Length: 304
Image (cartoon, rainbow, N blue to C red; front, side):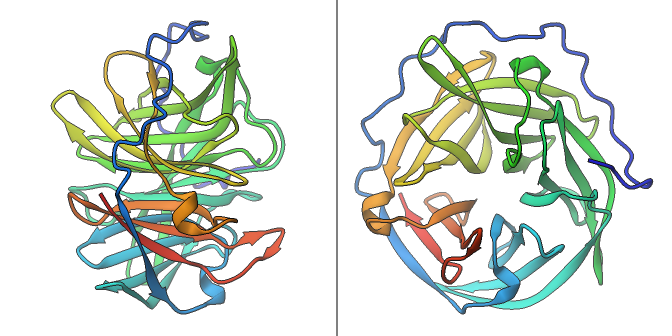
């Protein structure tokens, strides 16, 4: 993948270890849902070509929702009122590397319009850039990148595996790749916690809670004991809301919060965007493009 001349990579943390331990230090995945009675409510959202292939989601402020379609080269702003989303405007992204798709987005709290964009590219890769951009009046301008390095996990990103999940808080960001580490019959997602603004990455292996799922969306918040992450773990027929905590240990396990598949139907849509609305509610959005458009973009509110 060829980056534009304006794309300056931020320094990458020099990691001492080049691999991960063979055994998980955490317990096996929890198959008992933490919130089995969580309610899932559909959100009214008009069908729009501008939202086709939506794969990223975040809130910039109360009721101000932004979505990132994979291949349009734009971010789309919407207004959330009750259980209804209304599209209001979009912004062209300047500086996306050639051949890259935008798969995730996260606004950085405490900054003036700073936004992170997860990317995915063709071919095998040792690294993926997380674009650092500024939301301006008429555009989204890419100014640099964080580097998600696969070397600490002992894998490379394969074709169409990239940064699917992304979230940020005061002084940190968390990114999840679709690349999987398999060892001793266990499956782990590759997750990186970044220190902001310097871009140093701490690698984590997150043991998955299903046999075939991969992480497709993240939202997170700081806790006293570490960074609490809620995520979507999905595959065909699998659609789970899971939770894990990033603390001092490099290996952690995802806990099942709720199996979303029964609430979303026998063929659950592909949820690829996730964001907190408040302390008890999450907003989800679906990617409606798999080779072709498969239906309208859909959104849901999950009340825990």
